[in-house]
Amino acid sequence: MPIYEYACNACGHALEAMQKMSDEPLVDCPECGKPELRKLISATGFRLKGGGWYETDFKGGGKKNVASSDSGSAPACGTGACPACSD
Image 1 (cartoon, helix red, strand yellow):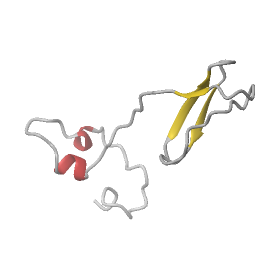
Image 2 (image 1 turned 180 degrees about the horizontal axis):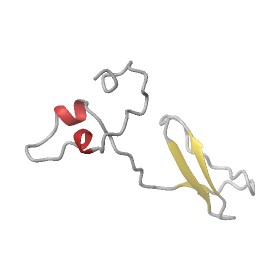
Image 3 (image 1 turned 30 degrees about the horizontal axis):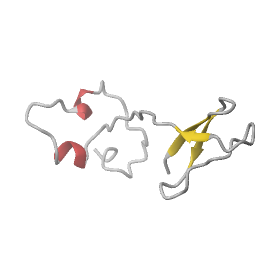
Image 4 (image 1 turned 90 degrees about the horizontal axis):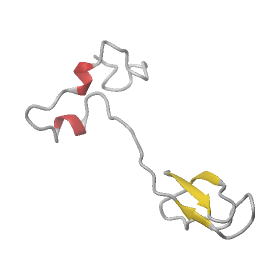
């Protein structure tokens, strides 16, 4: 579920809410109680690392292989259950 950021126009209170994309936006401020909340637009940041569809299927000619450029770091899960750990 995405995390949305809200700010109150009345009191300036800021909050984050985990909501389904189909949920209605929040309107009532939990701090002052007024119906002045507005949803903020914010940039999200993440990096897909390792082998996978995004690397093998959509990669152009001279683009860098992110998975092989890591300095020998171990996979995050370390269980051996995923393709990245079974090597």
